[in-house]
Amino acid sequence: MKKILFVLVYLPYILLAQQTPVLTSGTPSSANISEERLRRIDAMFTEAIQNEEIPGAVALVARKGKIVYLKAFGNAAPGRTQKTDDIFRIASQTKAITATGLMMLWEEGKFRLDDPVSKYIPEFKNAGVLDTFNEKDSSFTTRPAARPITIRHLLTHTSGIGYGIIDDSTFRKIYQKAGIKDIFSADPVTTRENILRLAGMPLHFEPGEKYKYSEGIDVAGYLIEVLSGKPLDVFFKERIFDPLQMNDTYFYLPDSKASRLVDVQTKKAGAWVTFNDNPYYDAFYPVRGAKTFFSGGAGLSSTATDYARFLQMYLNKGIYNGKRLLSRLTVDIILANQVGDLWGGAAGNEHFGLAFSVVLKKGQDAGGLGSEGTFGWGGYFNTQYFADPKEQVIGIILKQTQQISGDNTSWKFRQLVFQTIND
Image (cartoon, rainbow, N blue to C red; front, side, top):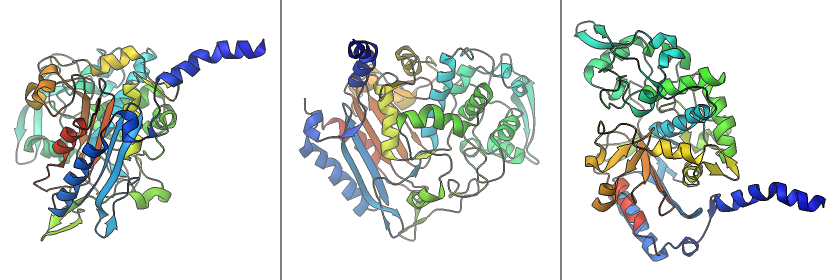
């Protein structure tokens, strides 16, 4: 009788785990992927390395919960061979994780998406739109915004907030003068200090009026801290990384894993060299410095396999390894068009959800992007990912480069992944 009760109680959990794949290594044939056609990806990367388009890369392909392709090419640093478990700065791939964390709190009833941000971070109450700018001293004036910034605005890049180093010259100068840390920092600044400074910066436009890539998701990261009462790194570890077994994903790497960090490289005098002379950030920020600033928009480092687990959770409609992180309905909301016609990404072939771009029917028919509903994004240091719910396919390509030209590996990889499907 006890055994029968045990089975009845735990049967739903057993079925749930069986119905939602946990990523494991598999043969191409086990996922209806052509091994012969996968070799076209090998040839593409080999040629790119030989032609010095890129110094190195790690690529992953998974289908139906099976990792059928995980390979490393070239060098992780001058003189160091690339390995499949190397750790990369994923920069803006952090945004999807932050949006996920915030929506987990939304599911707990902590806020409504159209709540003003100032309800939880009062310093944003007096946000103003840029009116005048003085080139001589980077001073500015603002006019009061007609409406408040909402949490939905943060997640959809429609808040009007700027983005420092990748923004126009006016906003770069304003942010630099104010000491805003745009993406990551080794300096002794806290997330709270940075976001409260950001609250005093001018907006590009009225909230909700336009789409402009921004530090809004950095604000969303601090909002997680406010709502949860935990530092962002702790929240991510407890609520996302541990359940998904993302054991190599961090804001700042432990000393034991620092040697696996891939160098950011550029080409100088015909040779690949470590790129460490950018005035806006420390290229070695994940392994040194104060380690007190957690950028929800761009601060994480990770591996191809770790990020694939995160994407598999989305393909599983919010579940991984029998643990539900998000409701199926919440996943649908995150991937729905949240900005209407304000974003015309990829020539109108995609819409924008909450931190993801999502392929439209037009994009599917244009070719090379995947099925309608395929979602993805990328990162500042040349990383990209995509996941196709219809075909149950994940593609991840990780590189670490700056100030190079002639790299065609990202679009080629995405196009080549879909031609491997063999059913």
